[in-house]
Length: 348
Image 1 (spheres, rainbow, N blue to C red):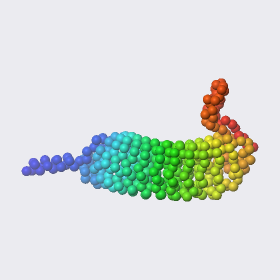
Image 2 (tube, rainbow, N blue to C red; image 1 turned 30 degrees about the vertical axis):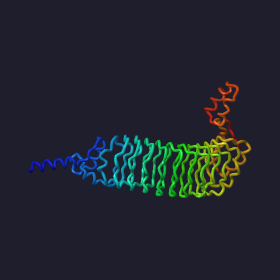
Image 3 (cartoon, one colour; image 1 turned 90 degrees about the horizontal axis):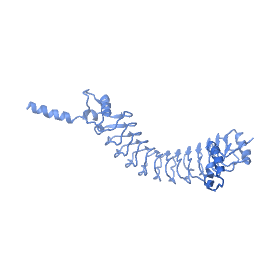
C-alpha cells in the first residue's frame, strides 16, 4: 500500500508541473517564479503569479506554458521571436506583444484594456473586447478592422493596408491612420486632439470644427483644400498635397506652425493678423515676386517663413513625353535631381 501511494503521489507531482517548449521562457519563469527552488514551475506556483509578467527581449519563440499563469494581469512579451500566442490569462488587462513576427492573435480576454501589437505581421484582428480603450497595431498588414468599442480613446492603425476605417468611437482623442490606402475618413469625434492621416489617398478631410484638435498631420495625400480649423489647433502639416490656396487662419489664437510645402499655392494673403503663427513653410509652391510684400510683412511680425525654393519638378512629370528634344531632358535631370525646386524667390 505504501509503495502504491508513493507511485500515485509521484504521478500527481509530475502532472502538476508546467510544461514549456522554449528554453528561454522556461529559464525566465524559473528565475522569477520558482518559489520552492526545485528548478521547475508547478501549477500552483504559476497560479500564484499576479500583476506583471515581463518576458520581453529574451529571444523567446514559444510561450507554451503561459496557459498555467491564469492570474497575470499585465503581459509584456514584446521584442521576441513569437509567431503565435497561446491562450491568454482571463484577468489580463494589458498585452504588449509588439515587435514579434506574429501572424495572428488569440481570442482577447474580456477585461483587456490595452493592446499594443505594432511591428508584427498581423493581417487581421480578433474581436476587440468592449473594455479596450487603447489599440496600437501600427506597422502590420491589416486589411480591415473589426468594430471598435465605445470605450476606446487611443487608436493607432498606421502603416497597414486599410482601405477604410470603421466608425471612430466618440471618446477617441488620438488617431493615427497614416500610411494606409484610405480614400476617405469617417466623421471624427469631438474629443479628437491629435490626428495623423498622412500618406493616404485622401482628397478631403471631414469637418474638424467641432473637435478639440491640437495637431494635424495630413501630408502626402490628394487634398485640394483644408477644412475650417478649430480654435484649439496649434500645428498643421499638409505638405505634398494639391492645395491651391492658404486656408483662412483668422480666429486661431494658439496656431503656431503651418507646413504647406510642395503644393500648388500661387498667392500669399495678408498674414499680419496672425500674431500667434511662428512658422509657415511655403517652399516648393508657385509663388512669385508679387507675393513678396505679404511675405515681408509676415516676416516682420516676426514670423519665420520658408519660401525661397519654388516650383516642383514632379508637377511636370506628365509633360516629359511631350518634350521634343531629348538633350533638353539630359540637361535638366541632373539639376532637378540635386535641387527639388525650379526657381529661387528672393524677397527684399
